Length: 216
Image 1 (tube, rainbow, N blue to C red):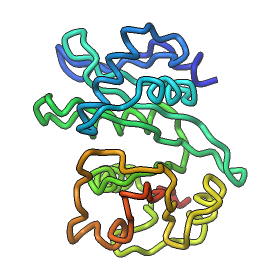
Image 2 (cartoon, rainbow, N blue to C red):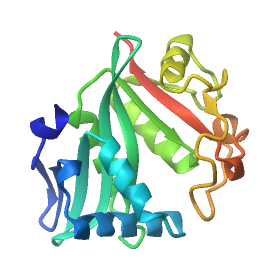
Image 3 (cartoon, rainbow, N blue to C red):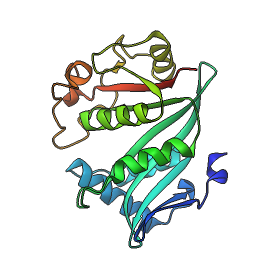
């Protein structure tokens, strides 16, 4: 199990910053409240504490970004098997917006990739910034991302997306999956992300599934 395999693994980023891997089922109440606080600051609106607890229970690996001993970010990952294919699923991933931009989100993504080593990565998002960061990770790791910037979807990735969420469209969009807009003000797609996220109605909870596959 990932929970046992990676418990208490640590990665030092610099003298005051490290990533610590925890078993999400063993968190203290104060840690859960800290994680909920990070989520709330990232979304720009209150997030129910129970929702944070539920996400912890669903995940296999929790990575904490610790800055001077305080939780300032976190990510959740799980190992899935979809269509007989091992998949590293990127669940929630947040870096406290009050921190200076020091590349911590990219460092966390690279850590998440190494934490559960598979040829396929998957996540789901409403946020163009998450798409761009996931695209960068796929480029760095030699993976093909679907949908690509031009909106193209390959059939293997679509099959994996539908194995995860059967109702996703031909563009890997999950209509209404979140039931609401997660952020107070979701960033708008720019010219580079409009063909992927431009059709989402985030007010209804639409999201897009992203699949990065290493072609062997």
